[in-house]
Image (cartoon, rainbow, N blue to C red; front, side, top):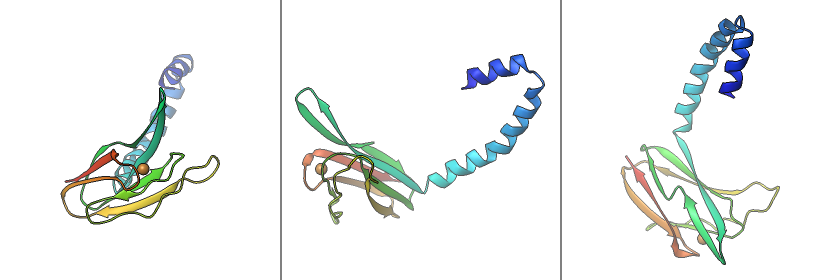
Length: 133
Ligand SMILES: [Cu+2]
C-alpha cells in the first residue's frame, strides 16, 4: 500500500501536497481511535487442529491492560467455552457458526492485579491471565 503510494507520488508529484494534507487530516483521527480502543480489548477464543489433536486457546494468553479496561472474550472456536476466574464464571459461550456473530463475554477490570483464568469446560489446557496495571 505504502509502496504503491510512493510510486504514485513519483509519477504525479503534484499530489504530494494533497497526500500530506490528507495525512494531517486523518492522523488525529487514527490517534484518537487508538486511544479509544484502549478502554475495550478483545481476547479471541480459538481452536486449531495440529496433527491429530485440537488445540484450544486464548489469544493472547497473557494480556496486560490499564485499570478500567473492559476485556471482551470473543468465541471464534467451533466449541462451547466458559471463562472461569477464581470468583466468577461466564455463561456458556456457544460454538461459533459460519455467518453468525461470535458469542462475546465482557468483564471490566478496575483493580490492578494479576487475574489468571481458564476455561470451565476444558480446564488447564485452556489458560490465560489478565494483568491489570
Ligand atoms: Cu473451553
